[in-house]
Amino acid sequence: MPDITFVVLLCLPLIAVSEEHNRLLYVDTVDKYLDMCPDSGELKDHPSPEPDLKECSEWKSRTCCSPETAEQIANATLHGFSFDFCGNMSEQCRNYFHYDYCMIKCSPDLGPWIVKMTSSRFKERAFRVPLCESDCYAWYEACKWDKACSTNWRSGGFDWSEGTNKCRKGFECLNISMVYGSPIAFCEHVWDHAYRVVPVESVAVWGSSDKHCMHIPNGKSDPNATRIIQHNHEVARLFATAIIRRVYGGGN
Image (spheres, one colour):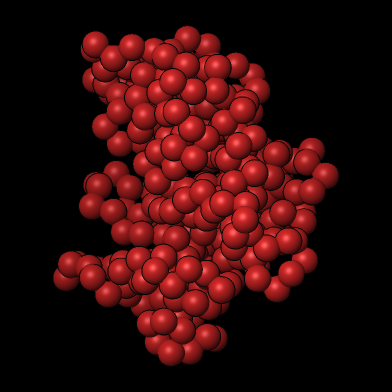
């Protein structure tokens, strides 16, 4: 089963919130956790099929993305964020960020990790989604010779005064391997803890009944994409069940 300490942390958004409306307070079944998308402006309220999805199409049978959002991901224009803030990002690194964007924006299975935000721009986000260590290492290997000038690309790491992200004055572009120092630090900090890396020794073998972490499909051409998405759904159900049992004493 998932680590209980982490499950308690997941429960905090449900029980330790301000008086303002928070829909997470009303998520009281596993099925509700598996039928929600982060409230971040550009996504749907609930996942649904998008048979004509051309980008991030591995998620088209059930997705939080509209075709417009997926197109922005493909064009690297979502939220005005540029990946070329330290010169042109390599194709292999950009591909991994594309896979990551498709996962974190389009996946219908992030409900157990949605938390409320105080930002006026984004009301909710995915936080500490369990990412398999093998995926993290592959992502890091693809990007370690690219450059960055900030460890946190999501919150406070850039100058946005001109409408897109640029390095802050005085911050030097260095190899990602130097900026982060390790694959785990990179995967966990680059998007301000959107992911929590799960060490390989605690990951059950695929096909077992106890799944601990998620994989990121490597695009629509990934031969394992369908299997990965089903695996991720089972991981989400496992964590949602643990939360419901912890908070409500049930598991439906």
